[in-house]
Image (cartoon, rainbow, N blue to C red; front, side, top):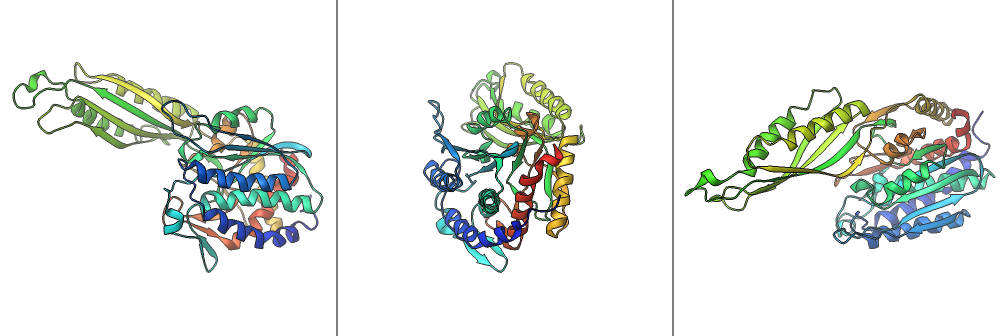
Amino acid sequence: MPLPTGLQGAIEARYPRFLAELEALVSIDCGSYTPSGVNLVADAVEASLRELGASIERIPHEPSTEGRQLGDLVVGRLAGEGPRVMLIGHMDTVFEEGTATARPFRVDGDRALGPGSSDMKGGLLAGLHALAALATIGIRPAVTFVANPDEEIGSPFSGGHIRRLAAEHDAALVLEGARANGDIVSARKGIADLQVQLIGRAAHAGVEPEKGRSAILEAARQVVALDELNGRWPSVTLNTGVIRGGTRSNVVAESVVMELDLRAATVAEFEAASAEVERIVMHPTIDGVRASIRRIASHPPMEKSPAITRLAELATEIAAEVGFPLHDAATGGASDANSTAAAGLPTLDGLGPIGGDDHSADEWLDLGSVVPRMTLLAGLLARIGEAL
């Protein structure tokens, strides 16, 4: 089945508005813990969805006593024909307040630069404009558009909503930017952010050190043991990224907190490595040291299933009709695609425009990729039933 007649022209006609809206969104400070900025992005997403005729559910975050306030979750439902598809993008970035002023949006040749340009304001807008272009030519797929306010911190608020919505849908398309080489994403590692606390016993380091139980010494031993998990399974990586502990050089350290990043490509390796991390942490080598471990955030692995393979093959076919080659790939980073794939939905990710250097001062979006990638996305929405 060829591309819908008039689709590419409808996409091209929307490009000037896309670029103007990209500048407006990149100019908003919307780090995960800047809810006022995230909600300004939510306002823009809601307005675009209402323009498309969507019914809107806007869900405010209600933090726990110790939690930090996050932005709203926006869910827009569009009535239409064919399989019901979740289209997911996130509104938050990793950047602190003031970044948009210090590093404002700019265009340099074929690149747009600025905080969140690639990750993922370009993809968020691509989804909205792809739907609008389809509506222009009379095609209205059945879509639930989910705008997530907290993806960059592991979707602790929105993740449960996304998993519940997955049960009502036939497929999911996630709007993270395509890889810098143009690849879309068909598999992602699972990730667990773990916090370990070790409690020993303080003592005077010079007068009676034998009464102490050093949490720092135990942490040092555990870091070495944890690091040795790298390579035990082909896809597993374990990084101890943060250690905080001790008070003074003449005090045996009573407590330490460690923050770990565990990743694996398959469910089997993820579960095996998780169990080994817990075994190491929960069996201290120093008598009298107590340990606890807490999972702060996590995403299960997104494994490339036969259903995902069919979706990737359809995307490759559509890209060829648009006029560019396309490949799918696995990546080590996690996204909301991990959750939808784990829930059993055929899922593709990386369907935004091409971008790179995410989370850095050099983040960029390839403006030359915007029209072809939006055309691919719109074509996939129109023809997704062929792969299901």
